[in-house]
Length: 116
Image 1 (spheres, rainbow, N blue to C red):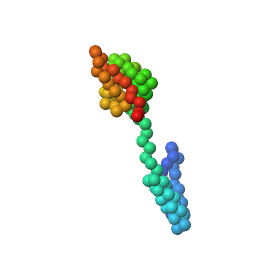
Image 2: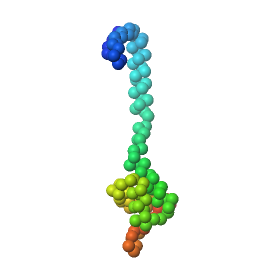
Image 3: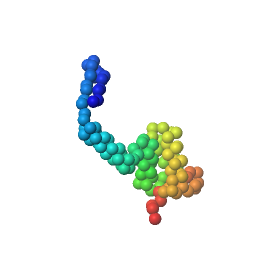
Image 4: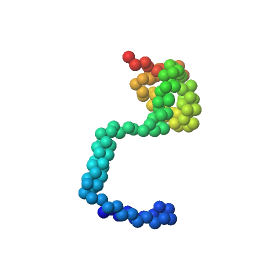
């Protein structure tokens, strides 16, 4: 027997379920199936806002091919809505293996490297 007490809004709930051994066994089997499915399913990492902005920043440079540091920073600031966030993405791009940075003249030049 299983008793459930509580309320739904203002309504009191007092529910009694009578279960025999077969009912408990089926319930236990269902719980085991659920645990097995959860354990075997790969944990999909949700794409958070930082990851999404990172992907957009990389796509922006990849599509442009090449941008000067100030131009790229301006676009990243527009993308993020913040100078600090734009600078963080610029630094991250500087250290990305897919990006080549050449310091020439007054400003660095960011170029997208195509995979070999």
